[in-house]
Length: 192
Image (tube, rainbow, N blue to C red; front, side):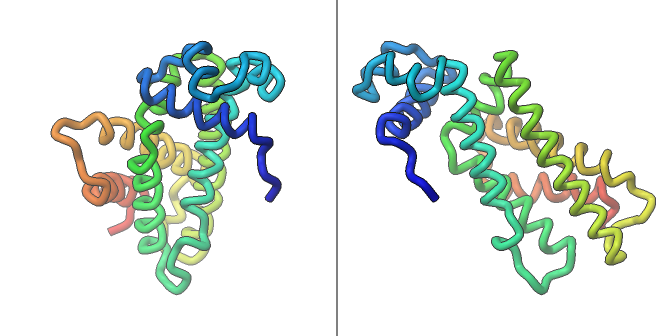
């Protein structure tokens, strides 16, 4: 994998830090100070502030897809056991990233970012639908499920459920959040 140019990576790291510090707000002057780069570097690498934010979103969702990928799951387990583990990995990824609450709760208010997130959610929903079809083909999920709708329901439910769990008071531990969400996923898919 090719390394990102130093200035580009400095800006991405500084922007993530500034978004966390500013609870979703990103001021260019604070960003360039933190990155120790000029505003021109931002435009050179990303074209605009929106381009930078899009790169952060893309990085977040690329990391999520990697974190929940099949190689991280038990190979000999039944479908439900594997998907329970995948649900926990999904939750753990969000709980481990301090930017997750901001991306799930604040940044979606930006129309450009909401559109970008929708693309990522659609991609993940399509993957979930294929996975549900596999569960149906091996007889572990009801054949009456509409896989496309179920995939969208699961991914959308996880996305919003995790956002709610991250806001919970008192704070919820990741394992407990994963169990809560897995129970809802399993129930919606007809898994006993």
